[in-house]
Picture (cartoon, rainbow, N blue to C red):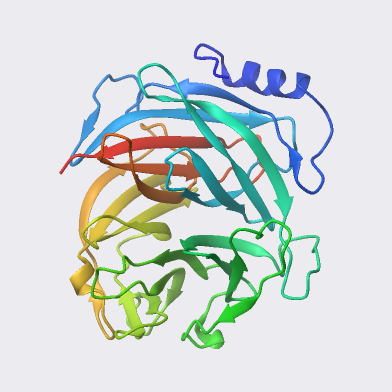
Length: 332
């Protein structure tokens, strides 16, 4: 359900009125959404370089676990999704659309605690600070910060299963920054030179040249590479698009410069061991745009065959921040 004309304060009050209990394992979470019609605030433009803004949502819930969304992946149906929260929870549900195909709300949402390698549940973020997520056939790969690792979960069955394996991240643990670890967890197309390999990019774990550490975790091009760092932006997520290019979401969030986000496109052929990649800037936004602490990005094929991009924000469970979902169509 969406309420287009609600103020943010009214949205919060309405969410609280729908229920006061927290979700337990696998409990449904009621999401109240307000549609966002403009990406550049107060302007009706929809084209931003090679991206066309389709619509967005601001979301709240009476469930105190809802928020801190780190990554999102769409299922092949283009409606169902899986997400991870940095509190160590799965977020599952479906996207609903209005008659014009714009984001309308979320339905069937459940928040479920993640289990570690021996099936334990953890309080706090020390062991289960989930940041990245990738769907890879019959398995789901999740990257974690602080205890830096990539764990494997079965799909189906991930909601109730412990992780069944851990993948070597190739990057030495002593080179990883505690809270600036593996934010981006993606799997390359099998038709690409990377042959379906998992790929990781760190948020702000830097090599001696000041570039972000990254790695190809398997396949014929297995090895480390780097992503050039430009200014105060950090990498927070990514997704491969048809043809094998990699989109990277970058986020700026500090007191002196304010919020910012941008998306870069890196040629798939440039991703190889020893490379330093940068890519082309597709779009950039600041406090004049409907953005927040942008953390998650996915690309998927819409019903009309075009490539759509979904972005989500991490509100850090703060009343001063928002849970946003934004959608773009990749035009060029």
